[in-house]
Length: 563
Ligand SMILES: C[S@@+](CC[C@H](N)C(=O)[O-])C[C@H]1O[C@@H](n2cnc3c(N)ncnc32)[C@H](O)[C@@H]1O
Image (cartoon, rainbow, N blue to C red; front, side):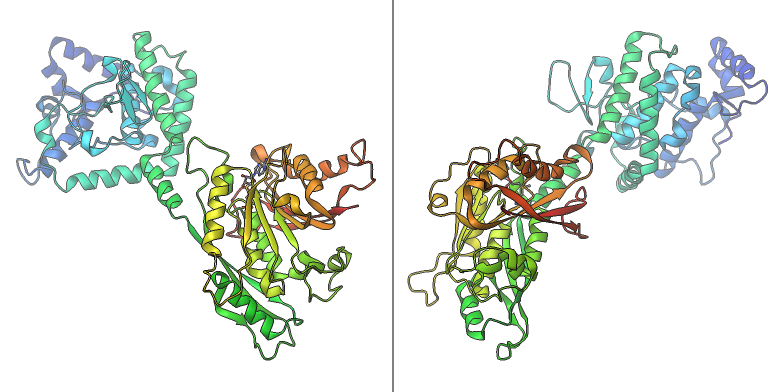
């Protein structure tokens, strides 16, 4: 390019530059060719360079080395009058850091310069699918409004219409034969679009531009100002809208619903090999390939088995019109609790385990119920996918309880349906010809903590153990759970409650409500019989890497019982 004097605004002005600009631009009023002979607008030079590159790529360059001189810049066909060009549906995209005028000197920028800058941003961040990136004309002039990356007409047409990016060429012939170069343009645009620095620069610029737009005097009309602000808002909002690709990815992730968990179950030396083998055979779905670790003949020391559970999981949020289906995924608290439970069953199940040594830990010793039942009752509240109940169902036979009464509850219809499916998948009903004893079934039933009206089988007996994980995420939950537990827990029972701690956002401080709820009973709510549910122990469990969501910092494990 040998364009002669480059006209236009510079970051650092030459002495006398503005004067020279004005003088040369004035020549165009007399004759355009006079101006072309002396100097060119930077904008025009840029377009001419791009046009020359396009011709070269098309094999239409006049020679291998080809100088575009100052007069050529202005005389290239259609350049002056045509809107800025783009090759084959892909605009010539410029990085925001180099194309946006400084915010502090916005008052010196012309309306056209602003329109070009915004057009570039729009084309960069609100790209159109290639199928309709061609053959478009200015939508903004027809009063179309943009929503995210597409435009809708004022009349509400849903047809995606391009709002003129400022780069769309009127030359449709050129659009046809770009072949593989389209891919290069698309790749370059893609990497520019993905650049986080450029994006945050653009975001700050757009925010600043919108904030100052009322004061800017460069706009010829109020409509022009509105159009510019609308385009800026449109690009800005696209930063916060998920793209179709992101939505596809999300859909793909949520479609992967089968999830397998395995936990190492610590078995006490008190069990004999026969009970373990029989129990493992009774729950085939949960028997690991490894079977029982350790020697079945030498069970004098502690041994371990692997408990496996397979779930329909990760479906929470799949239905866009239901935000209460959180129980369609297994939360970190249930995974952490299952792990703790399997690592130390005696600690959590205490004396309901028939062969557990009486006082292995202080907590186990403190658990009432020294007469273990053959079918103790365990109820899970807000069971969600049912991970904890399923782990218990798989573990209990191996711990010597072959006929536990397990009840998994929730209040949400879709969650209950998924819970039933998970139970059926892990513990299929034994056929009548089965050689094995009945597997420990799990009853699934509806129970709302806010209005617990326990019907069968919940009303048949009180629970020896209540379990609830990640069920305190609204201010009223802890109180509801306390009152619900008071109706369900046997006098000698224990309630294990795991509250997830989310230190930021709308859930911040919610886990504190557990202590408050149980303390509140001290006062006027103290039952007439003098018994109340109280927190007997509390433990902090650190979040583990790869388990639970990023907003979780850890878990509070509460041991609650009658006091
Ligand atoms: C965050 S999920 C936890 C699910 C499961 N315990 C876990 O840890 O993966 C909360 C569960 O509580 C259930 N839930 C919420 N409010 C409830 C209520 N009032 N009564 C019964 N269940 C409720 C939800 O349906 C959901 O299954």
